[in-house]
Amino acid sequence: MFRLFFLPRPRFLLLTVYDGISEREREVLQLLTEGKGNKEIADLMNLSIRTVEAHRASVMEKLGVNNLAELIKAAIKKGLIDVNET
Image (cartoon, rainbow, N blue to C red; front, side, top):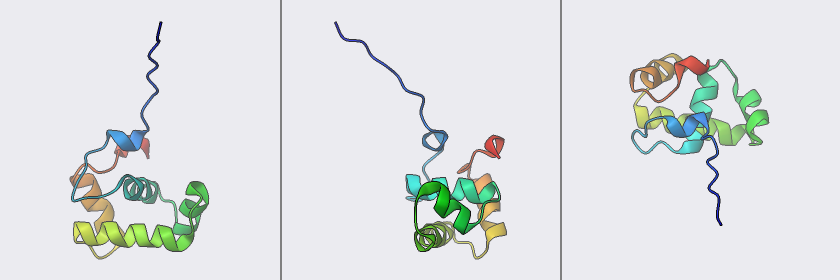
């Protein structure tokens, strides 16, 4: 007999896909909106700071924004982040 186990999905998988933003980019975006800096995100996700910066730049380009404030505003408006998690 087989048993099926359903594991809880990470909060990032519950978010809407928009403009080809990857799962990893959404994770970085969520952490940015929680007020975390690039170094802190890099430490939390076991990435280099340059990788975090690259993900951030990629998301900004995909959303057509130029700074962090615009990025957060666009992410909230488009439903890319979970504001209840912050």
